[in-house]
Image: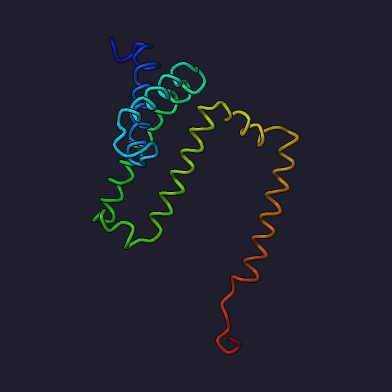
Length: 165
């Protein structure tokens, strides 16, 4: 089948994606001048061809795009469930102030995880927490955070006495 051939998935689709995105950015920003669609197309063509010619970035783009689809599907499920619970999605950011920061945190964690996984750095990050030498360091960090948190709760967490202000 054509859709799972290496030419289609590793050459044609990444080229088209990068070409269209670069062309659209150049058209929108008018960096190279207004009414210069041919020049914008040539720059997009060159950037797309360079991507195809260099295996590292091409493999990264090919590896990230399926995860983008997964992220969109997860976001769709979240929005459907949120719509069932909260109702009107057009008022999402206005009525509940916690939703937009939550989306930002979720997107940041997802993108950071995908970039680390596709970029081959996930094992290095995981090694920071699982190696014997580093685990003692992280245990000390956790203890310091817990102590500082307990001190913050003790100092700032109590109710203020209305008589003392």
